[in-house]
Length: 273
Image (tube, rainbow, N blue to C red):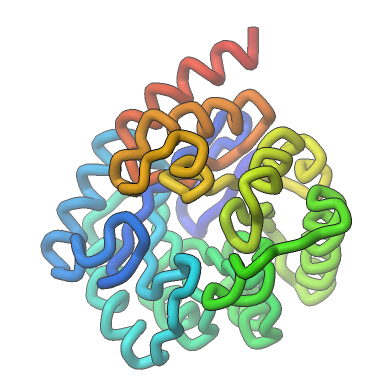
């Protein structure tokens, strides 16, 4: 099973690593670190050296309570970075955005993949994905970043998230989107227990296609370990990433690429034995 990202072909028969590149002032664990284009490009290059298969560029924070930014501001943040990365890197570049205008601009610049945390709710985003013929990550989020962690409730979190992703996937395929990855949305409108259940039942979501999991440095790890500082959640992240691999995740979206790549290799060897 392959993922075709324009001129790149990635093998989904082994876990892939997506390195997080936030060019934002307010992301939950690395906000403000890579606002400078040079710093952002240098960090992306290091993640590739450390084993990242994909680099995911985001210009708007989606942390709990985050306030939306304008299209112009998001474009100002991501366009210079994507322009440089497309020229310099030899791995696919993903654009992490909720805005069709931003997705369209970055895909025109040469980005290879679209990561939409709103799960293609906007029909214009579907049109962008079809027009550029790129793989799309459809994620589940309860509401919007500003309110998603205000008493999230489900009848059955695994079933409810599955049904949402099934509907969005079917709609996208009917519209002409050819390659879809689903993301249950750990941390996006979920309690600690919800997140753990989603990780435990990754195999259910694989019925819809390849599964991406973003557990890196998330707040549920902080709550389980008592670590408030998101940048100090590496050990918990490695445990969560390992669990995701053992349960069948295809893509792991992470901040600490080198350490996670090593953990994933061991977990995958155990899974295959």
